[in-house]
Image 1 (cartoon, rainbow, N blue to C red):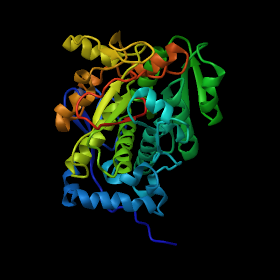
Image 2 (image 1 turned 30 degrees about the vertical axis):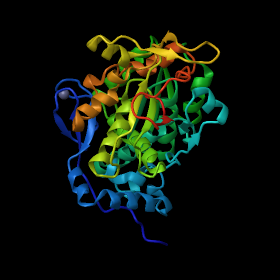
Image 3 (image 1 turned 90 degrees about the vertical axis):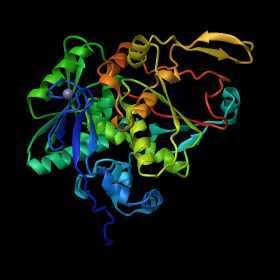
Length: 404
Ligand SMILES: [Zn+2]
């Protein structure tokens, strides 16, 4: 049996309130700030110790882990030191998530769009969504927490009709005791298809009278008053796990993301926050030497983040030049789903440097609600055919996962 190459480094994680800046130790279940109700991000207070290694050394470490024999390091925790370096090897839950391929667009599609681009196919995660990244981190943390406090029973709950409940139920089922999985849904508003994944994973599914927001209120009340693990997007350990997307993109492109454009659909902006945070961490450690450009794209049917910025800064909606050959050059369309670069949370995150948060967690609760209200899969975000990428020439677009 080979010796484990699991890292010896341990950090210290703290919850940091994005609204009031209050800090809380990372060894308790917290979702919103007890002082002000703001949402949290997690911060490793010993992050600066990682700077004892050069960027080149970190790149070499992460590249070497591509051939690790340690199961715990085979998925998103290849980048252990950048994620949740308080976990022990035995805590880490690995179901095959992460390290999804980046697939070049087919020639016909590339020609139609007018630039070469690629998709990171996060549909190849275990429950078929990018949410497995965050769940792997959240459930690994829960295992660590149960072991630390010797808890014999913890209820994991979420209100969701889609990917979140599917992923939460799958990981809860895999971990087993002391975790029990419950999914709350509005009565009479969910199709059998939407229930198939959580039911198939053995979750207890409860239908409540009311609408989706009523379910969220119940979930939040449970999380605030009982030993209940909330697995909706207010769970900051999920946001942390989603940073792995950025690390994988950088490694895929040989740690050179200069000129790269990344398009990330936004739900409540949790995912794009994670993506930007990941790139900023790598920049700070010298693992990458420049940042990619990150664009948030939001459906006009559920656009709380767009509306937040548009109202605050009185930003007009983008009128993108339509140069589709069949519709004639120079025609202008309103593109309400395309977030202006000036309003992109990524820009805001970049500007604020290490604060790396979104103001007030805008629209945090609305994401799954929007999905439910539509009652159908999200529409593909329409990137304008032939539209030039703003900024530098030679940029390489890469489409990312959505953000709920
Ligand atoms: Zn606060």
